[in-house]
Image 1: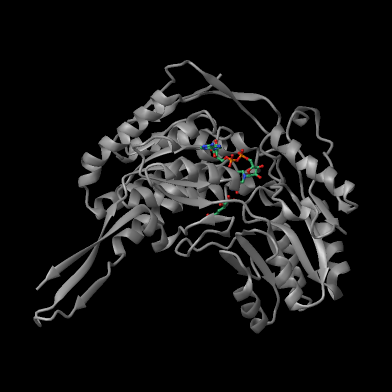
Image 2: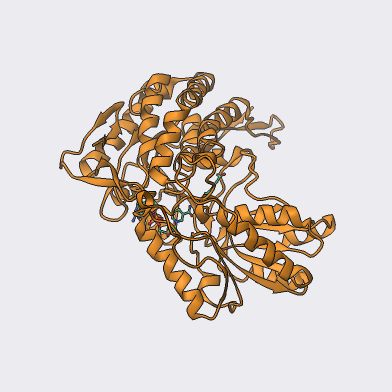
Length: 486
Ligand SMILES: NC(=O)C1=CN([C@@H]2O[C@H](COP(=O)(O)OP(=O)(O)OC[C@H]3O[C@@H](n4cnc5c(N)ncnc54)[C@H](O)[C@@H]3O)[C@@H](O)[C@H]2O)C=CC1
Ligand SMILES: O=C(O)/C=C/C=C(\O)C(=O)O
């Protein structure tokens, strides 16, 4: 049985405690590996290694030298594409057809984009007048923030972890990564790539374990970490923020959502259906940007529901290696229990189950997996928990609306504000509505279309801060102003 170790100070090491936990395949329920669980000792060793590496060759490199190494990291991921793909799909059960287009290429791109950005970014300068007439010159310099704690989730493991590690390293920081306990493989494999690319020991560290009372908490409570970046559930974000408050450490939090799609009668129906299908069901609905609330203008409501139902029923459920499959399992049985509890709640609350609502029949070799059916409901009240709480499963509720104002009010009615998708061919309306949606990201006639230079993050309870492009610099560097009296 494969053992998955921590990556600390450039070496793969086990836990002193000898504690290991199972890595379970979501596709069939089989144990695929045993993972070392970090105690305080391993977390401390990783933080110490990161701190020391800041003072070593990494801290002395020029931006161009670091960028060259990060390009090698990206190329290393691409060179070992099939291994990363295999590992990601083993951990998550997601179809290879999906991970080969999204997860792995983005894992590589996250290093290249930020390496290039850092090489080209300018700093601010201000000339100022002084009473003696000689003046002064202010200029900003950016310095790495230090040791960054990276706590990442299981839904897009490599993509989301490197989305943080790429800019953190490009800015000259060192990192301690705590990947989700559900998905330890690609973060570990990346350690090998880092070594081969010439990243000095201690710059990239990985500790495995759970959240509370385990590696996650030990990392967020560690006094020698300078800042934390986290993607995951809103409640976990609050816990991490509380821990980071001790010592006044900065946090960047990308949290939950209950995102709205708004479909106007003047939309291009084919595009709206294709986009909404992806936004509700891609990655088995486990994307924080996904649409779980769909508001459709009344004249096209029935037609839209019928077509989305047909699209959901055409999804091909299957294991990662099935080339036809575009719909995998949920991450775990624990998560399936949560999703199925909402499926039951919908029925209890009087929903019309348009399609799905249960567990699909699977062949014997996949019967132990965490499979659920893609599910669509109509007819729920606006205050049903199914409509107001993040389910993080392959499901959506569709409700009609009668005016632009009503659609905006419904979209903005929840305490989340991560993402939204608007479907209309009327350009004025698109701009007008997009400007009024309370969310960090609004797509018009698209979904999950990502330019890594843009600001990314949530408003309200969906997060704090923005990452992406120059916005990542704000988090991963300290901006110092130097004022020179002339
Ligand atoms: N991208 C997103 O928005 C995600 C949302 N979720 C939502 O969260 C629910 C629960 O899933 P979980 O995997 O438990 O998400 P989570 O937010 O608890 O876990 C994400 C990461 O945080 C770590 N973590 C958990 N508690 C921690 C703590 N006290 N201190 C430090 N680190 C901690 C976990 O080990 C994992 O690495 C899901 O059902 C889903 O609704 C889960 C994963 C991703
Ligand atoms: O950075 C991206 O393109 C995707 C982000 C997705 C999430 O943060 C998520 O699903 O949790």
